[in-house]
Length: 457
Image 1 (tube, helix red, strand yellow):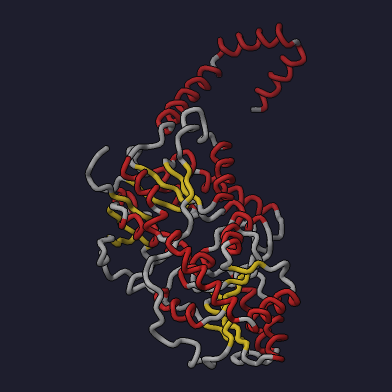
Image 2: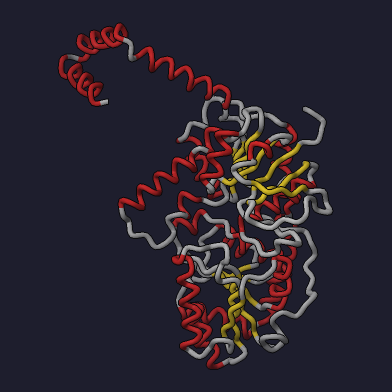
């Protein structure tokens, strides 16, 4: 094994949380977490983010280099790096990388966003145009699989799902069957200490004694905010100190109006029911480095979603970050992260997203604060299991080893061989020989069927 320090280029699809770009989303946070984890495991890391975001520093205090990428400079960025990381869910970027990255460089493909399913978890009209667009996107996403050397996903459910994908696309084969090209690398958390250093909600928007329920993050189509709003309305009649804070419900990085429908509904509801800025509060997208204060002032965080295929294969970014924030969680469940936390007595799973069930669970926690304290204690105990420097050890070891997937060269040679065979197959002598064999071995009907099929080809 080469003893020199290995270098990786991480292509982020969004801004990363530097001093300049403090407002970030899931893709940028994932890239940043991986960068810091790999950096602590002895890998030299460069993070490149899209060139439409501001970047005023070229290196962090811990030695991570920062760059901007565009389709015009990607080939230049590849130079000097041993490995490149990219999300397969960003099809245009993935396609470019797969087709242009030099063969001797490792390609690490992140599958943590189950885009095959997630892209369907919205309001669809089931039209031929939607199907056509999906099939077009599918071709882009699938370019990841023939070229990738190492694939990472977020949980065991995804691991089984992508083993199927890799098998169908020929990457689980006689050469790779006993060679690990797919590994689980969940969304992680930083080992930075959780400290409250500023009052942001309690003693600012609400009283210090109020029972603060937090909804943290975008209100996307697969979430279910309505029953929570109705529950808060009912609970506030008896207990006026029950407050719901919707923080970052409108994602500034998302322009699709369909993704804003639940946010618009929630805002209209609060105003119509005279709960706006009384029992229901809306806070814009905040700086990443300020979320600690919101977490520590909250009594409970709620995450409700529609149970679907998207739920089964998801690994909720926000749920994992609640571990860092030591937040007791009330959730619909059905996703692997929530179910894991429920087993550890860190989360409570609802039987259903009904107003009655939600109100009952929140009411019980409102009356029994010791339960919330116990859950906080349990969450603090499991935090190290999710530290980025711990969960990136296997990926760092793969990069240090520096071996491309053993089947990649073979697959390329096989493609060339098949092209030669195809050209040979279409030669006149070969076609005459094949026709004679079919005629005498399978009969006139099969012969005519084959001829008809060849003419139509």
